[in-house]
Structures are given as structure tokens and as C-alpha cells.
Image 1: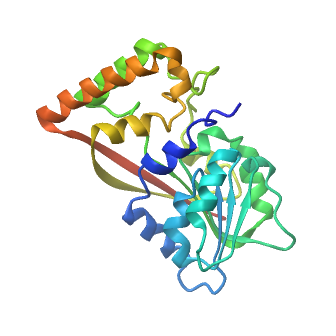
Image 2: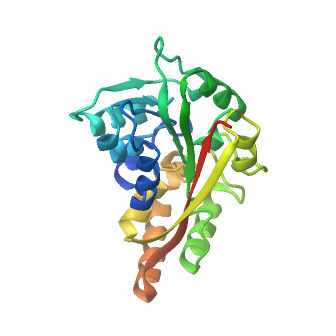
Length: 259
């Protein structure tokens, strides 16, 4: 079972979108191009193509989880550009004959992939001047503030001290910066941009967000889910009354090109 088998509706409703400044960085890479094909790998519910559709001429969405891609199909329905959906792993994506992407985006998903295999695949299906954008911003698990620390401790009471990655796995963080991994690929010219983001959450939004993640999906709590939710509501309401549920995040964007 996928790490995200139960999370797709929560993901679609509660995951933060792509910051406007990051959208501008991505659209700027396509400036002056007549052909602007977007390939979004690990697309989840389609947040990136939804944010970029006005700047591109066609979209390919690759997502391994059937629930996620069903949500993406709903979100992207009615766009005025062609959208092709591929329910497969990024490593197994098969480009249609002669097609080349001008912009490849991987948002909050590169850590789930066989990175060298994906980058090798992209060598064969991208335009010579294509941009590969790897981006993301951590999570409420990695955020550091009084309320996120207290929330993480509460989750750990139910799921254990190690961060979970679905029902039967623990999360294994990559120990090498993505910039180094990209630099060893064909897309070795890498620029990094950072976008500061302040998010103000409500209690219900935080809980919905938690259920969208692999570290706090509802099945991890078993028959104690109602108990956890009551305690989480109480904790979050208390912190909201004190000073609000504010998350200060940094959205990182790596823009990689061929040498």
C-alpha cells in the first residue's frame, strides 16, 4: 500500500500551495519560448501544474498514487491546455514519441524517488535548454516553534519517536544536499533561490494537513484516532489563543540546466 493511500482528499484540501514568488521563478524560465511543455513528477494532487497552466502549452502529470492522481484530474479538469495524466512512478514514466519537456518540476517529492534514475531519464526527454526545478519547504514535523514542537511530541506519543513514512515504514532522510545530486547529473548548472513564507493556520487546517501526510495519516493512530484528534484540538486551540498558529517556512527552489 502506498504511503499516501488514505491521504489524497486531505492533501487536496489542506496542503499549502506554491508561493507566488516561486511561481514567478518557474514561469521566467519559459520566457520567450514558443513551445512550453511542463512535466510535473510526483505531482500529488496537481498543485504545480494548476499554478503554472497559464504559462505552458501542454502538461504531463506523473503520480504513482491512484488517489492522488484522481484528485489531480479533478483539479486540472477544464484547463485550456492539453493535460496528460500518468499513474506511474517517476522512474517508470515513458515519454510519448519525440516529445520533450521544457520545464520539469518536482515539488516536495524528490526524497521519495530514485534520484539518479529520474535524472538519467530526464536526459532523454527534455529540450536542450530545459530547466529541472526541484523544490520544497519542509513540513510541520520539521518546523520549530512552541506549537509545532508540542504537536510533534503529541504525535510521537501515538506513533513512536521516529518519524513515520506510512504504516510500516520510518522516514529515512537523504544525507546529501539536492544541489550536489543535481550537479552530478546532466543538469549540473544549478542555481538556488529561497522564498520566505509565513503561514497562519487554524486548528482544523492543521489537523487536516496532518492527515495529508505520511507521518500523521489517520491509519497510524488506529482505534485511538478520536482520542488523538481531541487532544490535538485542545493543544492547538490553546496555542492559537496564546499567539496564533504561525509557521515561518522557507521554500527552496533549485533550478538546474545542462552545462
